[in-house]
Length: 176
Image (cartoon, rainbow, N blue to C red):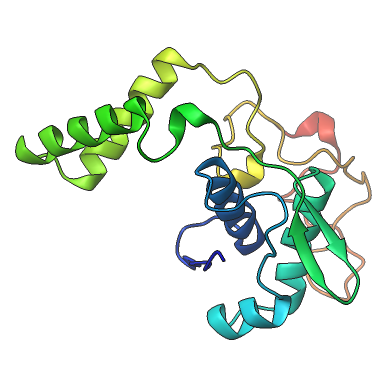
């Protein structure tokens, strides 16, 4: 069974942390089809998060076809993401373990290794999809502040006042 670790300072939504951890367990073969995920109650007791957060994560995994709920029995893995090439004991995994040992001997810290691997991944496996802004992508200086149309109604300078504030533009044409 998988034990979830929640990092409240990561900037990643809690439900996404659960989704990513289940996917990692599926990729590494730690979870296989037929395995039962921890119940919502078990996750809440172990992590002190809201039950709705767990349910949201499990619904996302269900939407992706990775798990299926069985009423009264729990949530079960329906499909694997593991590949034999990445399994424990595989030649690739052994080479990676050797490389990591050499990196540690060379004095690289965890953050150095992470940065190096991320850079090498970006070079060899370019991303083809856009990352949603909710995952922390900085906003361009040229992008609009909001996609909602702004009202051309005059704004008041004081709450309850109907007199417009002359320091603020009345319409979009005046704003730059």
